[in-house]
Amino acid sequence: MIPRCLMAQVWLALLLGATAATAATAPIAPIGAPATTTANDSDYTKAVRKLIGFINTDNQDKIHQMLASTMRGALPEIKARSYFRDILGQRGKLLGIKDSVAGSSSTGVLVEAEQGLWNFALTLDRKGLIATLNITPVGPVIVLPERNKTLLQLPFNGEWYVRWGGITPELNRHSSVRSQRRALDAVIRDPQNKTYKNEGKANEDYYAYGVDIFAPADGLVSMVIDGVPDNEPGSQNDFCAIGNCIMIKHSDSEFSVLAHLMPGSLRVKVGDTVKVGQLIGKCGNSGDSSEPHLHFHLQNLPVMQDASGFEPYFQNVRVTRNQKTRVEKDYSPIRGDTIAPQETK
Image 1 (tube, rainbow, N blue to C red):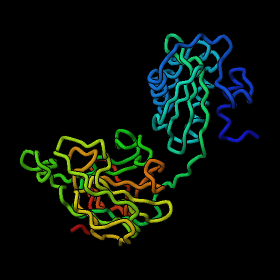
Image 2 (image 1 turned 135 degrees about the vertical axis):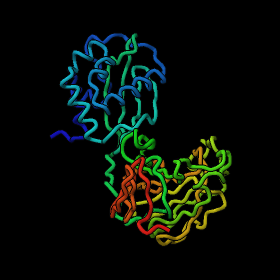
Image 3 (image 1 turned 180 degrees about the vertical axis):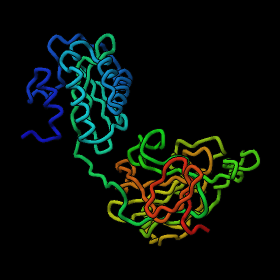
Image 4 (image 1 turned 120 degrees about the vertical axis):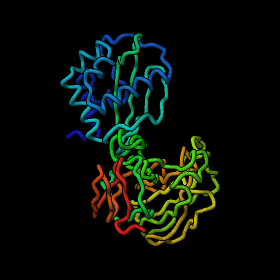
């Protein structure tokens, strides 16, 4: 029985008239494929970027428009639909391009998915259409927790507005970043829905700036970054995108990250044990942040670039949505909600 991780590449190889052995060792080229161009990395990455967008949205019409005629004949729409859906089924949504290396006959574009990596080996014809395509898994499947087992409480007091939170790109700008894909960005707003007073030109004008931030659960501090200056509102620091931050280990597979904190406000160091509700720092505007806010996410590993994010659930949250307020005992942030601890201070 063919292992599931190899089914996609072997199936496509057989479809295009190649053998399973060929599929495992070389890009697949249909008989009579048109000559390829001397395309550079950017041509390939642009093509793959478009392709993964269409795969994620199951847009078979757009996928077929990207294929050269020989590929269309070898991969009719009904088979293409099954093939690309299986790609998503094996390793989840495709998040984006991780790397690209051009070769003499094809280019391998490393694509990051929610639960692992794929290599998209392809060639382009003179019109920029995909002449050959071989998609193979890279490394093991990453098994993600669906949610946290550790009981979490909101890391702040008072009412905060969920600027970004949820699963889809429309709800969460972080959804395409594997380690942050279920992140929460929260700000404080006034009754007029403004996040600042005066003209908003200074960090001190923003209601969230300098507000106390607390540990969401018991744990061990595993990373601390301090000393990154706050930005002026409207500017961002892409050089140190996470800004001042604290990572707390709650278990071997649950790490919380609280970011964009105020420099000099952090109250803990690596190796400290913290208790739920303990003051750990103050909300700031450091890193990739254009106004003071708190960024929070959960990840499964301590190294951010290797980790995968998963959905955070908080206990006993007062939620206001569509002008109706209720208490949710188990709550995951959704963009547009106003939230506070049930017994907020």
